[in-house]
Image (cartoon, rainbow, N blue to C red):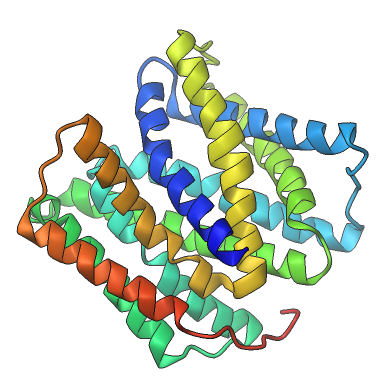
Length: 295
């Protein structure tokens, strides 16, 4: 089951970039993110309600659901989308792979989970592999815009990691991932709606069928299915191991780019792929340790 959840997260998140590129254009980024999570929240909340499985979590859980909403379904995505305005998406992927290290450190601080040498080495191999994969993009040099993009991508990754911690707490406290995701997506939608209103961003209607299909894929598959699979994995094997999905989904994206966009592999890319896969093998040969249930 763990392998199935991990594969689902990697394959789904490795293909969402196609839909995101379709959405780029006349609709403001903030509005596109709002549409994505509003539709995802409607699908998940509506589905749970229709099947009679929708419950209201206790009041003590609400602050952590709001934290999960802000870190996973709102602010982190705004950081990532903004970062791509300054640096290539491949470089954003390299920074995002630091989620493995962030999760290990935050798990240690908040839950007391030990950071084993195997996990640390696997995370380092994953990060190194992605650096090699995108070596040609990294060689462009640093300027003020690049530094700003790196800062935004790092902040987005840190928020993503903190969202993982909130999700882990919610699961340990007895809130099922589907329920936590549904309510968190709903709260995230309200925050995004407030940001749209507060900034005066125009609510541009979806311009064509391609945009609508991309939005449906991002909401239903990329968000509802992808995040449910990933956060279920966080609850089952821990955030450090689950976050290795952030290392492998750029590999899927490059494979698709090879098929559909004529991407040509360089020797540094092949070496990076080999290093990242070695890190994957090392990470998942680590047996999960028993963890304290609550932070």
